[in-house]
Length: 276
Length: 292
Figure 1 (cartoon, each protein chain N blue to C red):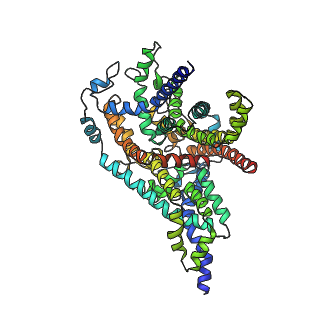
Figure 2 (figure 1 turned 90 degrees about the horizontal axis):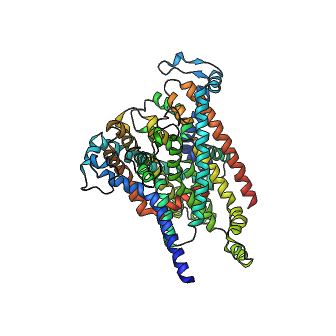
Figure 3 (figure 1 turned 135 degrees about the vertical axis):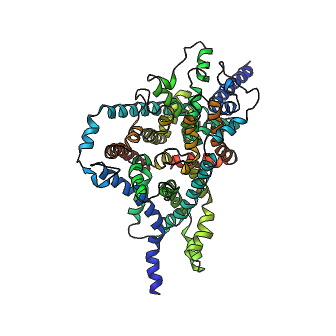
């Protein structure tokens, strides 16, 4: 009897957890299902759970609703340029903050922390005016260059660099290694987890970004995928949910693929950023 | 030789120069510029016609009803999101904290929405909340409850947006709380078990006090994040119906082209609110450091 009760309790617990999981997974399944339905099927009540025949044409129609190749290209360029630029800027800065003592370093590091706290929602108006003056608005630069200094990344990487024993660096210097070589051969390989964390974090947040491109762009040719998908609602009409969801699938899939392959890494990255 | 010494003195500055240039140009200077703009009636077409108006923009802010509406909406949103997110993620974290395979899968599953673009999340939920053909109303009807207008009624629009934000971010905070729970030394629980303490008592007397620093941080992070809410509002309701979901950032966004001075002044107010919250955050941080 006691054993039975144990089994019942475990089964109920298992089922409840499955329901919880379903609440978070179902909307994505529903998105995929809708993206393959006909218009009539989406307008049925009760809803059509599984399309009778997958309508791949919806994807074609969604991609024809705007210059989606341009949007996709912009998203890829923006995201990857930001990651490379951030790493180039961040590594020497973190090294200097971690391993050198120089006048003003505390003040400058304080400025980095301060920058970390000031969101784009506060600064977008002056930044826009400034970049408009520079004639950048018709280019991709406003979506890339303002992110060159990743304050969170500098902070995290400095912590990592500080944990690398000074003796290692000193012995490399005795072997006449240049500082550049020390960074390349010692610091970077030893801080790979931190660099991966920062790069993943940047990838997710800039691929997904909607606010910044919205306020920084005024022409189609420089817009990223997020904006293109959001605009499907206007171009496709509010009730063409099968087309909107098809576009949505295109936006979500790259992130889901990355998540599938690096879910442990991503989970760790996000937890780490929350605790520190 | 001298050349080498000179280079060694300059080197750190050269290494931080790109980073400091970026921060100065795109964060620090814009803040100063924002404050400057807030004292002007700015003319976008003809800059020379911009006029210094002193504190007029700020006076206007605090006498305009729509500002108070936006502020009140933001506060309602923030309180709703903070309370629901904290309560639910704590409950789920306690429930899923044991290191089993299935718990890990469920945790990874509920975390997924956090890394999905807010655009996708918003669009999927608009479809789920569609009043005539949406799945949510289908579910309500099939259990005998009246359907809701969700985003299309000023009474339910805000709670609908709150639901979406909570749904998207709960998995992230669950992970953080689980990490905190798993770092509680097992010896404490063993001692409690020896004393035959009830599970509720263990939770309130041992678990909660130990993870309270992390809960405080989460509280502040969610509060700051909620004050910046914009994307869901822009995509799902456009501030409506009837300004029921116009939040502070959306309010600034609406004024950003026609009244740059006024929008900037509102930006200064938002910055002051965020600065205050951040100050509280750092107070807590320093306390925690002393405590350890």
